[in-house]
Length: 579
Image (cartoon, rainbow, N blue to C red; front, side):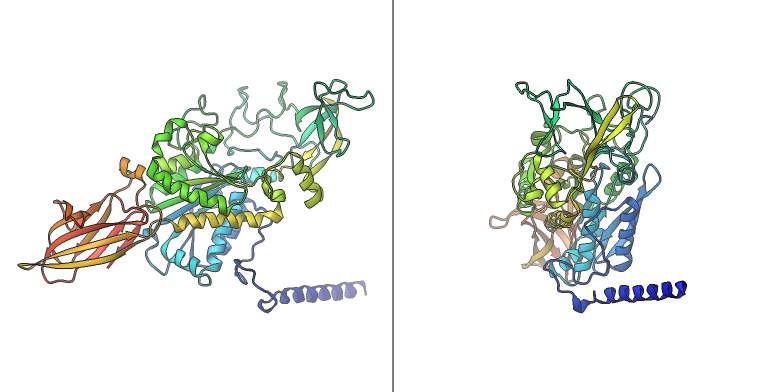
């Protein structure tokens, strides 16, 4: 009888569950502006995903939209994981390899996790809105996105699955002897209270510098030099991060997973570790970065790039070092500033800043290599800051406590608890958990994803868009014709950054004519005064150094023959156009 009852209850539960699913039919949903309507791939963007979780989501998107997404491994991580990239465009229109490309990545620092979700959100949003939102449809017809959710797949998992603070591990998982005792990673953080986070230790002490805040027992108040503490008020001393001395050297947690900084490993302005803390053996000695560099070098169509870090609410551009100021010349800064200033509007609470001047010196950074080494306009966004708590300018540390209490209902803070420590004796362990402070809280994460994606799309939209806007023909007599062609770039970003032109990073643009006999070819410097520069070698295929943003170039041929000419514009970053 009990078994029959259980079966009946199970059936009723299943019916109720199916009813709930059916209640979410298209007819029961009212579309919110700017969001996909009834998406094929259902994803919750109020949580974070492990490396395997990101991989699974990327696979679902690719399987749901085979005409829009190719899922490609660009190489293996140190621990042997595939680095899966989503290449997003309309594969049924144009040659994807010749479209202007935008590169996006996240999570180069393993604890800076939001970039993974922003990347997945970007691929999801583009695919779900293609064919429904004209702007997105046109964008994927013209451009291709190379989206790599995590550059640091091994350590992303370590941050999520192992005991860590909100700031660890920053590196990858290659072991190093940080304390130079001949052992590798032997004094890792210890999760003494078993909550998955490394918080803080404090101990009662008659000479301590702190007391408990009488208004909020979570907080500690530092005793000022003029403060008189009543004898009945307990003093405390901070003992640092939760942990023990595993190797008996008198220090706690001093040899975690090998410290190197993957964002000090790039081959532009690289300095060794004794100058730039965190640099590894030599540029691109970190295997995950080497995979990215190899991909970028083999894809000269990349015309814009974006990386995502945390935290601080910043839109960063280079240079990372003051010595490199001259690399970022005035013409290119006009492009950087136009996009960066737009970003401040699109991302409330974010500031558009220069790394070396407004943050700190950083040598061998990714964004400097993309621009300095490849001539690609690149930003690095530091995701999230306290502005998001109450949508006001940054306040004090107290805002974190207020936000936790009022909007997270105490979920972000581990209450202080007594623990018998093998070295310190009776202590207390507590503090903010690793998923708070730097990582965006769940209910704010989708907005963070959308706004940063929108900034990325704005940048991508400004990549070169070329068209042959005018072809004029003039009869010169004697069987000769003069053909003058105007090629326009309808977007902000030129086909070559000024830095690129100066250092000849990428090949020139080619504007060619076929179907006729070419007698002479030239670039028109001033059409009104008939000022031209002739190209005497191979005049049918003119070499143009750059097609400026929101500008044009004019070229001219003297041709013979009665054929109908075909004009072709071939630009590595601007694509292929014929007329």
